Image 1 (tube, rainbow, N blue to C red):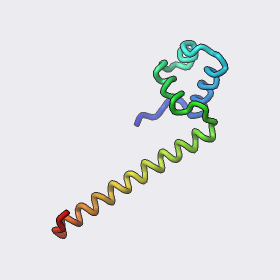
Image 2: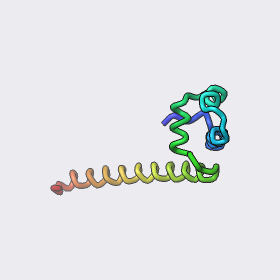
Image 3: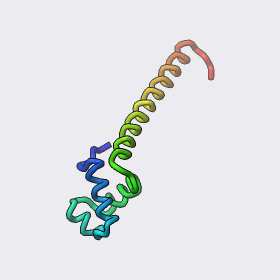
Image 4: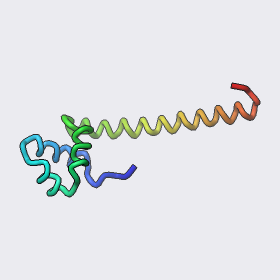
Length: 88
């Protein structure tokens, strides 16, 4: 996945500016991102504080690591079954 140019703190700052009343078109133009990106961020980070966004990032990376471990375990099990000739 492509790394964002903006940190969670910056993204939440943009969202807070929009909540205060800054027009979204102007905010996007000044920040250098598209309207679609803004709405994607709002769906993901809307109503969050910076600490919550950082915790979300940690949980997402931990979840990805666990998924990789599970996939490797399934591959190992499949390889062992094929070597031992066990039918499913």
